[in-house]
Length: 335
Image: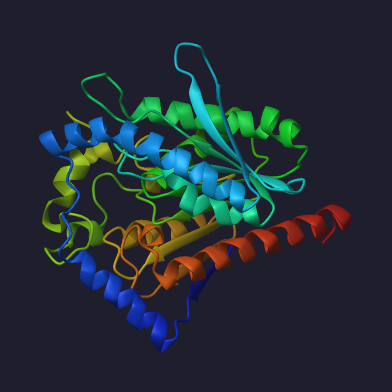
């Protein structure tokens, strides 16, 4: 198979604008997964979700995108979905897994990253998987189960609901990690009907990839020197070897039988090696495109930098190209 590397091209003005945002981030608080900060984040998350969700729905409506929500899955643990439906009949369904370090974030808080897909004619189903919470007894396998439930729904009822043949997957950061694990879970069940998937700044090694271990105090968004420690808090009771188990760290899993993939990462992302190493491993089994985003820290899509628009445009083009290749393969099965 093949790994194709792309580097986004920025104009001098775009580079200056991105660097101004990075400079502002140097004085922002760093995200940490220790006790009181985690509890505070879990308390504030539903408040932010409701406020941003209402505002986002109004904004999307003005852009011609309808917003709705419903739950799927078992009664004991329903999985809420936030649906963004384009003004015209969708040509495909995109299932989205938000980021947030496994402990914060929501489908509604991801509207800013998913609306460009809806405006381009894709129906979007963004997943509110269970966030990790040791007080409530929510662990990594619960989040993976929710994501697998959503992906099964997308490949069956979701396709019928929107009248589409194709389902694409996109995950960002923690959502990319969960999406990869859910995708492998479905592969093992015999589901292989995704034409392609997108992973944006994913975390694929919970024991800490080389770039995560090398992160220093200048790291943006995260507490760089303590990243390996914070990753360890996600799976209490496990040592580094335990955190490399394939059901926790997809970098060490069997990647055979998975669809073509696009990996997007930033030049300043401490999890840069996660994306690079995962792309190299994935490319042994399926075609892979790897996009390098200059000046971009982790989470750059959320900060309104020009790099966000450029990366999003690349993702849309990549989906369009994948659809075109799928159409050719259907019309000419011998090609």
